[in-house]
Image 1: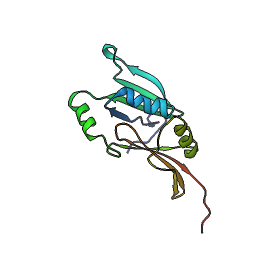
Image 2: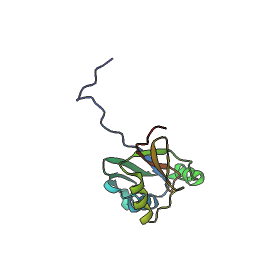
Image 3: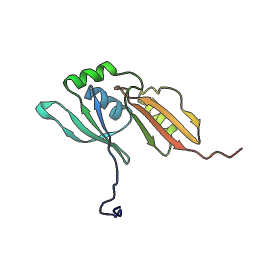
Image 4: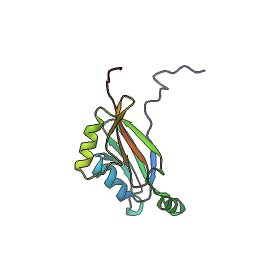
Amino acid sequence: MEKVTRANAITSVVPLLMVADMERALAFYVGGLGFKVQGRWIPHGHLRWCRIARDDVCLMLQEAEGPARERLNFQRAIGSGPSLYFACRDALAVYREASKRGMPARREPVTGEFVWEVFLVDPDGCKITFSTLINLPFA
């Protein structure tokens, strides 16, 4: 087995989410969650792909075309897409910030298993969870 060195170390993963409507996805991620667009691909004057970032986290969004777009529109339902779990310093602060921007949570924040968790769903059915470890005393 090859030894991991600084030269071959993997430093991050950037998920690519297929979206049915780029404007709607950007309204959610940029307008609602505070991500910023870092890079974009705009063939023929239409935004098809972008890289978005907030703090140390990046995502890529790509607008689906043809049959893939039809499938996304047909299958879009709460929880039908992939799940993303974001570890953060204060999930409740993210919840309050998103609420101020008009982003409805799927339910109120919950605590359990030594974490606070905030649950959202993007316009394409992707489950989004923000999670913060908390210190609870043992019983």
